[in-house]
Length: 217
Image 1: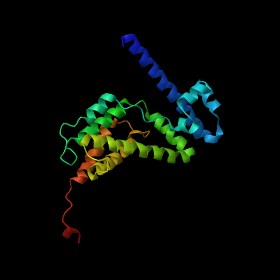
Image 2 (image 1 turned 60 degrees about the horizontal axis):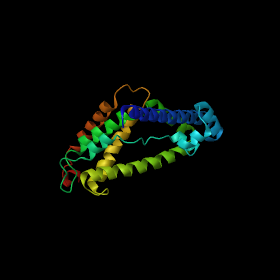
Image 3 (image 1 turned 120 degrees about the horizontal axis):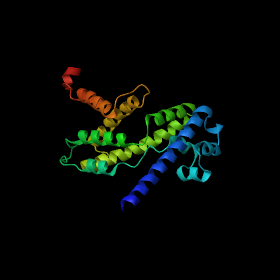
Image 4 (image 1 turned 90 degrees about the vertical axis):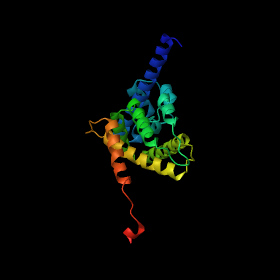
């Protein structure tokens, strides 16, 4: 592919992302103001400046448009770097997993086309239509299972291995709290800094000794 073809592909992709984001922004705004039943697909199309056919090329329903596409394609180079494990453990998670998770997560977030404003729009829409929360939760559970399989593949372990389960559960919880802080209206700090702070706080807890059974009797 020459430079002109590459530029054309890049331009089409940017237009595709911009159209998708415009549809989602309008759907969320209308949902927050009127609820899902308070507007039509035609109104979304009119405000987004698109045709009805274009709308359905991107989303199957108004609900889909409100939820949007948070599962952007993962950066291939970041994915490859994460899955390359230089020191696989012998039946346990490797010593490089935490650093790899940190680098991979920061890269995905920093390259994401989802902005803090879009996340706040989604929160406003869900506040108006709580039924959307169940849909978002279900999709989140699917992504967490996919994440567990990705981590397990890197470590050469089963997805239900206790080490993988705990690593994914704890890291996901740390990321969730970091996301809440990062996407809040008052935040001005970069994601990398917030995630590092949260990981160090978690690590400070888990390096503490458990003591002996006698200590708790």
